[in-house]
Length: 279
Image (cartoon, rainbow, N blue to C red; front, side):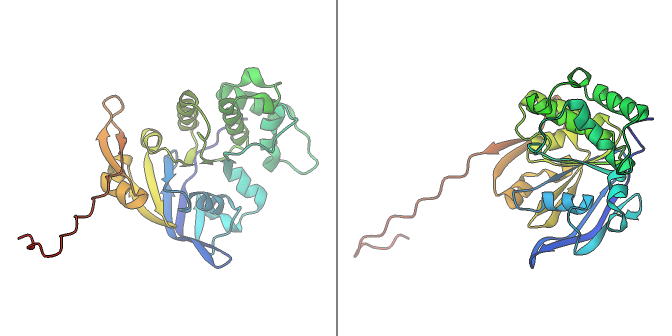
């Protein structure tokens, strides 16, 4: 048994989502080719997490559809969706009292009947996934005792044992220091899955993603390779910031340096009464 299946193809076609009459997404189109790492970026409230939730079924699109390997995810059962798509969220605070091995074994749920116990094959998958993410030595530790970077690795291992073709990650580097941010993103790229990541750090997104989709007010504002998408004009339009975009000399990818906001221009002093007007 292997903890990596063939990478899936993702296609979102005209996806819209409205909650209580408020449109959160409108006509979002996105593709991820098998094995690609695609980043979803944009300011807070632009619809990134909402789109992820539409992809994995926590929300049902009110328009359009999401296809994974040609199958409409809205027509799949919960377990069938979970065998195709795994999610790594940024919040693991609800997990307590379990060992790392037990947390990772939870990922086998979509492949079992309700009453079915783990077998030797499941144990091999769990052990293999822990080795893959560099956490084999943590198997008997309590999950809540781990550092933030270790927790993210364990959650990725749990996703791997679902044997998904598509991996969704919502801010996987949130609250991690620089070393763990780089390690987690490098790990994701090495997994062999198709990956869709929500990221806020645009320099990290430029470094780790093959293509980017920029959301603004629930719509796609730009898409393409990072070098084409991350322009000074786009940053000003979408994020409202001044920036210099260059090419990093070591990585060859876009490197963004944010600039202070331009100081306001002071108003001209009033012309004294009776003074001749300036020419």
